[in-house]
Length: 280
Image (cartoon, rainbow, N blue to C red; front, side, top):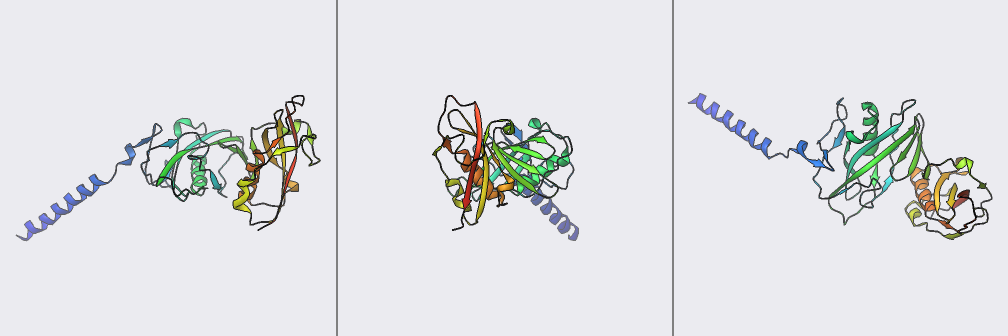
């Protein structure tokens, strides 16, 4: 009778384990944007190209420029591993919750031209520490894509147009817009418009969230004949603020400026645009 009782408990335990295993979602078979989704990654595993826990979502934003208009508001201070001569693309699926915290990220292997697994994992670590805009009205989880274009061993352009320059221990936000050789274009360093073409529209709403600091942000802006800003670059030697969130906000603001149109101007011209900031 004792043996029967013992084997009975074993049978109950076995059945319970089977029921638990069957009730657990098999997320390895889930797909999003045509990519198979893996769940609960371990960054220590050599073959792991995902991190976090995936929650099923109804819609996916494949634009690469934010997740349903929610853009990155805090960029990671981690540096990706960029080896000498490295160039190419890294693409990832990113999922966030209402607060903007990244809950899941996975490399899209089919779209990456960089294959070094140590480098790919370093981008996952970078994504994990990013924060997107809060949205209490958003679904509990939303997913989108984030692309990185590595153009040299120390420079990366994100899919939303921002260029980051990486050193041994720090990363520096340097520009936004179409990557151009702005040093070869006509340049007006007066700070009073771009070759007498005055500002006709400005919107600094992007900077409201970072008005708790004081200092100066100096930028080089390039505009086309219509007066649209096509490129913005920090003038590091004249910029006294180092906080990347502040710099990102002012680069974004500068991108939204408009200058007087001039159909007779060169195709593109550049000039200086500076911001003097006083903490509120």
